[in-house]
Length: 114
Length: 113
Image (cartoon, rainbow over all chains, first blue to last red; front, side, top):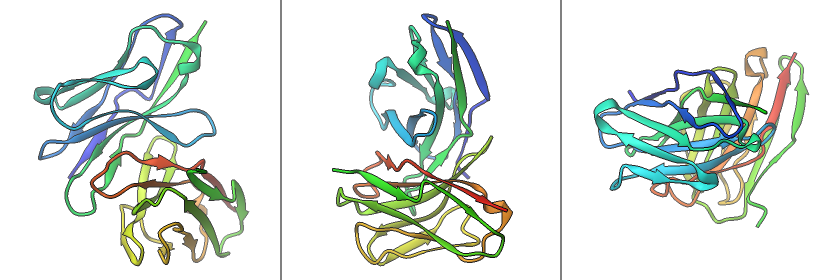
């Protein structure tokens, strides 16, 4: 069965520091992978997606993610965090058969300190 | 475009009551879905629809009903509310099942006492 693991429940980084959020997935075929961000009290917004091709994908708000098939990982990175990046981040995998469902990880809450 | 709208934003129910959470989208999207979000569990799929008149179950369908009579609307019905259904509910839509980018509504926070 498909699954997504985000090992870190929460992470705190200083403003201006770099960020890496971890994501591991389990899926038998080539996965469709996503990162979403949820600001407090809001719905989810798509940051970036990977379907195929270049394993380093760029997203909105200066985020990027790298797909590593050998490690079943799709980690999210940002070189310099801004206070406005404080939010919850969800990694997700798209199961491209049957109902074409999206499976979400449990999320990582990012805190940014001044 | 209003995108995906959900009503109400907040709701408190007593155990055993029924209610309908409303979801509408004005983007002519074929695919719509309902998720619940619980702390430490991310979003879990309740029901989804690939088009008007077609619905199917997700991971956690028990206690919920859906119907899709129009492309725009996808209401979620709680037949007999239970405290375990206390959660935040999100509706999402996407153009069609093969187009993966989802658009989420702002959510409904439901408390069942």
